[in-house]
Image (cartoon, rainbow, N blue to C red; front, side, top):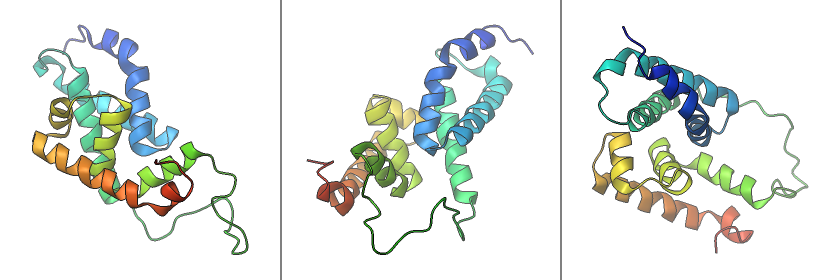
Length: 162
């Protein structure tokens, strides 16, 4: 196997792809794992990738994250602090944290569409390519995600979404 161009790609695009991975996972350690797993898959397919490899790697990241999300055990979620019933759980959180929490509550596909569209500034066609679906599906998932975010009382109560 030849690594022609792969090393250069990794050096030049890893920071941007790591940001995308973080936006998908909301966890730096998971984001690093996701990027590494995606790069391993890209390496094995490197000779077959035509044109710009970033959309291919982005699609691998979305698919891998979705697979991980589906397999994740959800029975217990450890927290640093126990919630106190007498205090507002959102007191002291800034708008960005509230938005991240709302994004975490979205299903994986809807979160991926929002991240790729509004944080990575990809077109609907680029998102469809990255997710392996049609432009119509991207539009539908974006519409559903935005509707859920607009109905999220934590965002509207605090004025995050205006």
